[in-house]
Image 1 (cartoon, rainbow, N blue to C red):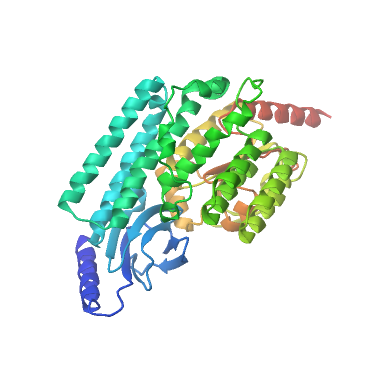
Image 2 (spheres, one colour):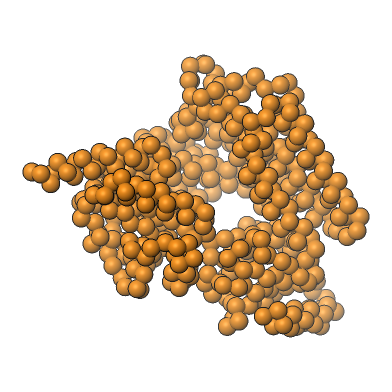
Length: 479
């Protein structure tokens, strides 16, 4: 396999050199090899130029030329997982990855590889840092500030050392520096939510003077880094944070409710009044209200919030999408019947979901892209099944991956194939059942009537819902 990949790389470099005398220098090559592919294509996306679908050949490789290249951050996705790359004129970037260990196995070669290997290394370091934040956020505020300041200085020093050995473009310097800084700022915005928790978040105003001094350095309208994860994460947490002032203005809230209507309207109002960039404003408005729609059972609040949003957004496509999402969510409220869907079982047979439901049922929709979450969720289902033997549990995969990859995932995670299914049309199902990024749990009665469409699998509410639906079913069976 390595020999084939080396041959592919040589061919790419030779091909690039032959074209190096061309007067057109606004292009780049992007290619790669995928081990254990989830499907037969990747997508390459940039918000300014749109999305390209690139198909793999019989050896699971591809080579794609991007003409009239717009330098900047692009994302490529495969099987639901994605990673960010930086492309600049004359780059010939090649990667190799194994889907069994997507990010950790990703290695770049060719022109443009050094900066992108630095990017992926920074991404992996940030993932570790993010996992540690649960503990970091418990530090006393003054200690937290010292810890984070030291961490930022170390990252900037490491980057300066890299630049001293490998001169780079101003664009790359700006992206890495911005990523370091906005990650730093984001953790400060997240801190009060972790340190005080929902019950004591009213004390967020008691943080030391100067805790948010970095806000004097931020730019809420920087479109040049609007594709950067660190920047977008900061923006989300920044507005989550500053909306607390209005939420707690009367001091009567005993515990913070992230789904409170007044809090979410205040976030949208602040985004609208603080940001002048239409691109950034529409992005934040869309994703904030999307999160509310996906997690709220309060349809009256959803209608009020969507109406507020429609007055602020200037993106017609976003408005159409979100109105359709609200309509779909309204059909999933308690008392409605769940819309039917066609499934595929482990043997490849088509079957209607309705044919599987003749007793109280939990439907758990899961994604192969979140293996740890999927594993833990399946363990939780086994635990619930033991407590509620009269309840039927159905697991449905909603990835747009191929059939054999799904079966391979079930085997690798050692899941029983019993009551495991895959949506025949995942795209349609995601919209119909308003499925979030990695899961969806629905509780139904024996007639496909919806008991709950948003209850958390690991929450106490789940056990309570199953207890009620089990008792109701037992009572009706005795009549």
